[in-house]
Image (cartoon, rainbow, N blue to C red; front, side):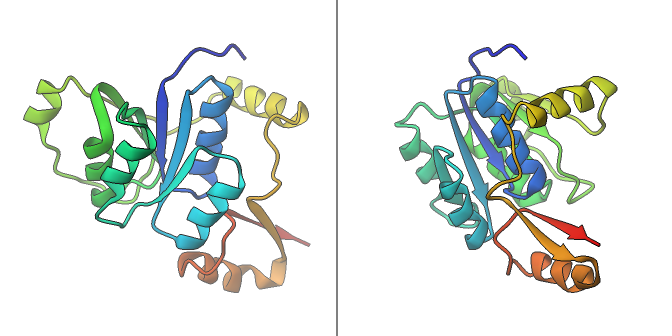
Length: 183
């Protein structure tokens, strides 16, 4: 997998998909990778995983925090792995002019967008939903090479604890972004 400079990347949503996007952005040559989430436990986890910064996305100062973290250079690519109206607005608020917003989260079906502002700031808006066979081959290569592991962001629970574990995940009582149920 070739690496190219990506500038500064912010991922909104530090669940399993968001974390994997952050790991991949780092592997692809992102200058800095920041993760934003509304779960304080996951924000703390992000710092422990070696990302350049973790920001509470619910804070009114999250936009200022991103500007301060990047020393005014801002964010070139925002990946919204949550997909809610508030996260889509945050993505637009933190992306640089000429930057790209990649929407992969499916939280809300519809969101009003400040289209005139997006046109004037030449914001690229993309979406991605599905995987190709090559995506699976690339993911397997990253795993077998040890470039991405499950360490530090997954938790294993017995199958019978599945419903309770997912309730705790939804209530933001679990720090890890992914629960693996084992028999």
